[in-house]
Amino acid sequence: MADIEAEEAIDNRSVDEVVDALIERRLGEVDREYQRLARELSAPAVRPRWAVENALSDAEDEAMLDTVDVGSVEKSSRLPARSSPERIVVADRPFALQLIGFHSRELLDDFVDRSPLPSRVYMREERFRGRPWFVLIYSLHQDRAAAQQASEALPDVLGKLDLWIRELSAETELDVIDTSGGQT
Image (cartoon, rainbow, N blue to C red; front, side):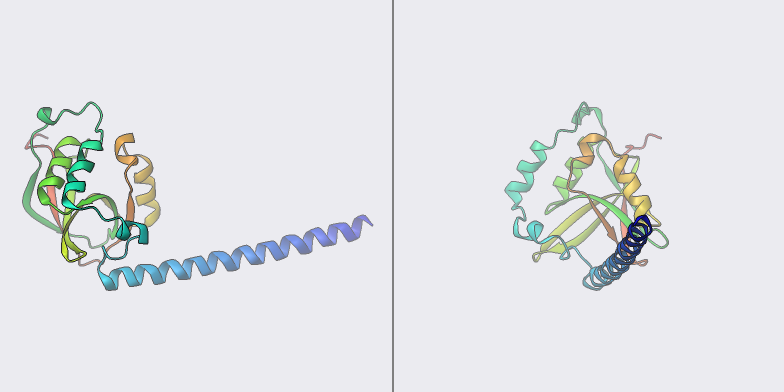
């Protein structure tokens, strides 16, 4: 009797392992196809459906800025963010940790000025629903796992945002934003 139970346990475990492996393989295929389509469409149109359906108006963009509590960082204590004339190419770091996007560059700059960010972040102007869309990228990474790890290490106030780890094409150009205000 014990031998039959042991064989059934081995057979069940083998079936479970095979099913798990098939699911993992299919998930990998779906993710690769999603990333291919995202690159083809050059995002941000490839956003979760709820994000598209709930896109903010300019007034809502501004109101959202007021709801983002950046903790003890006072706007007046930080020098304004500067877009340097520097542009970078994503190249071998295609995974972007995107924090937020706005319909107005001024709102993005205001958010940058008020937020605890590293000395260099990145901005990209795109089109979303036929309008300019300015996205703020916190960091670039060689793989999704590194981007995920970086997202987990964000300051709490930034970690509460609707983060998006997205894969950009290697040729994508980004504007560098110097948040140090000339300080190093």
